[in-house]
Amino acid sequence: MLKWNDIMNLADGGNLKPDKRVEKTEEEWKAQLSAEAFQVTRLHGTERAFSSDMCSRFERGRYACVCCDTMLFDGEEKFESGTGWPSFTQPIKENAIAYRVDRSFGMTRVETLCNTCDAHLGHVFPDGPEPSGLRYCMNAVALVKK
Image (cartoon, one colour):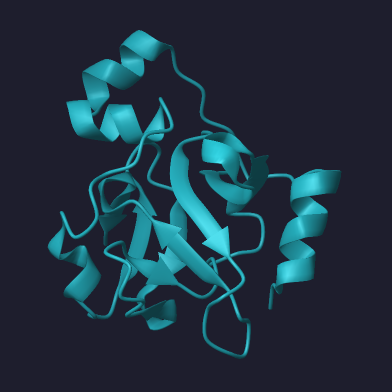
């Protein structure tokens, strides 16, 4: 189980090797994705809070990257954070997510990316429920429920 110190070590010291890599040109991503999914995942945007009903759905299943279909989260790890974005306590595999320190907007956060295709997913914070204490705050448009 990943904890905050693990996340910071990965963000500072280098991420785990992904199982595979998917790389496409900007034109290929634009052709594949909706305009909003492209803005969020490829240009590191953020969808409006509470813009998706994914936040309030707690069904069995898994969540994959909208860009490359890599499995990222299990629905068992999803919880109501009240933030307006789907939140999870752990990725499905430790090497599914890559981490990058994000110092934009005058604050320091840890950005989460799909480790397979580098899609921007959201951020991870150390204020989630125990036992991990993590809150993976994801853009719903970056995920596909399976």
